[in-house]
Image (cartoon, rainbow, N blue to C red):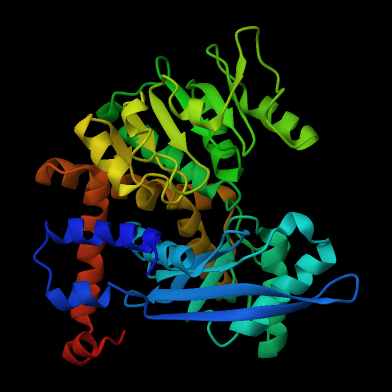
Length: 422
């Protein structure tokens, strides 16, 4: 059991203190239901074969099929995949989706692969895990360095193996292959709905609040775009190499246009007061709202006492370590946790799955309306639990999720409850 997974499980223990939950429920959630590892042997363009380590974890399926993305990254490992599946279990419960949590990954640097090698790798993943996934068992989606095209290859491979069209096996697909409208900005839009709904409680306002966004991928860009359109001043953004800061505000659309042309945010249109910072410096910039939207473990024990933002919105998965959480809480900084803040992505993935099963597809306005109808009430409920129990928002979100998961486990009855079935 790795360090990341050990830290993640501390959230479960913290939540359990505030609920009257049967010990068997906690025991059932201590470890994944099942995890599969494989080596993907891929034929490279030069004719050689190369092996890539790959994993898929189904953490808990008490509330329904497991759901979670597949990431391609050189640092992917079993510890990370298990942790992400754990988080997905609680994220789906927070949003009240009929899913459990799952996750997958391949240890690979996609920048070193050609398009044909990437396709072979993606199809090899499905070949290796075809018995593990399925429209009613485990439903993958895009994650870090995977996208709609990768999902299209995977869905196509599964359908060929199943000898029938199976669009519901994968979400995050291109629109032409059964994807949902509104999926492209769902994660950022979900976080935007949470902030706008709670802004008065958090002391934020469009005309006075300044926002720093660490990362400028899909979720970060759409969040910044929506906030900017409502009058919030975006004063800093970053990518994996550098950050830009402009006290007079940045235009997210112009920054993204520059990034698409050059591959980086540095050099984007700004004014004379703008300057380039490191990612570490950006996190410590004075602002009203800090949005970590990049990798895990960005707010840690060493920098938590330097964070100046009174509110943190976690669009990334696991950007704050437990040690940093403790420091931020003592300093009175409100952290809106990932399992609430970035649940918009999996919520619209759920909408896609529903549409695939029905064979009927919704206009984008309907998708966005349905997303808002989920995000706002769940954000309010987590906030109310925070106030009722005098706890931080992360613990409140886990209390909210654990209550739903425990109720589902107990509702399965004695046989399932004590046998660990679902």
